[in-house]
Length: 403
Image (tube, rainbow, N blue to C red; front, side, top):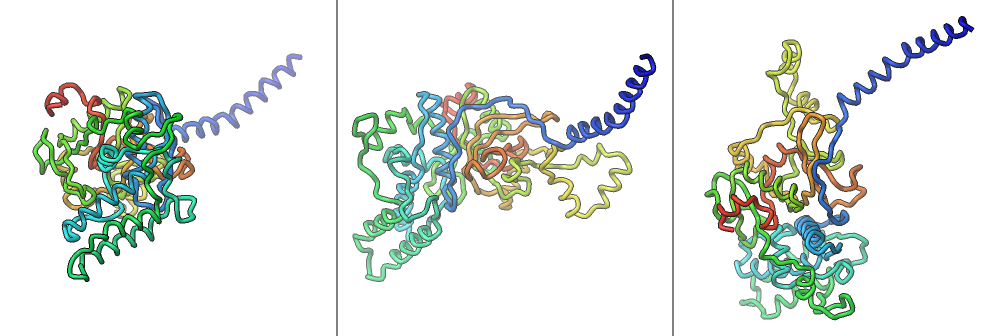
């Protein structure tokens, strides 16, 4: 019996020696390479939608933000029509384009305030009332429509008849109706006929409660400024803050139950929706050992890039200041690319903060269900503007802005 016990003990020791180091190594390898995220804040939002082949991220991002606001204020989950917003915005944009003889921006892009401006003027409707899918497609495909609308307006401003026809806008509206559908004057909601404005009121969406903020040193701080980007075609105003305070606003909002509509650059190499991450990596050369530093310095820029932009494990991030933000804005490396919806905060195992970001590229577009995590450094550099409920401002900052 004793011999048998010793044999069993020896077998156990042998198995431990054979397998445990490998298992421990595998565990260490995972710990050293894979992201591990802890959710710090996660606010309730509606489902991820798909803008598909349309340049209407601004509508999807801001509508998602307002759906979260309705959820926060009324506890009602809604699915609002992005194309109702697009249809009315394209009409207003055309009027300005023609009024200025083609010297304003006319394209698919827009800003968060385009959504609140439409709601203030025309209201809003549910997705079931106005889906904007009139050309036999299951998803939005605006390539042809966008080209036709622009070509039509360019023909109008050439005034081939010697002057503009009084029917040009009616004809333009007919094109929108063909591609997106007629705008309903009223519809049934909870057994009662309501107008789009009445529906917006029932949802307690007050456009006056929403403000936009930016952060660039070319503008005076703590004042309203006209952010000079092409998609601000309506010349709306943004409060300008130092970047530290802009980030404080974002954090304060998310930590107090609000969400944030985000406008920024996604052309940066560190943005990878497919991998569900956006980073601003940097190698801290001063922390490397002599041989590691020597190896790093001998790498080509291409080789350095391959080592830096690894979307599978956390690493060091750049420190972003106001000067760097301004430089990237001035030289067009940080541009007005995309609107998305910030809904919460996570932290990786190194203590780096990331912002939970709801995209509008469908829920099967990556392994995070259509979401991604954007690092704090990425946001500091690439945020052009945000929209928030004004009550989400820290109290002292609200006083400073006169709000």
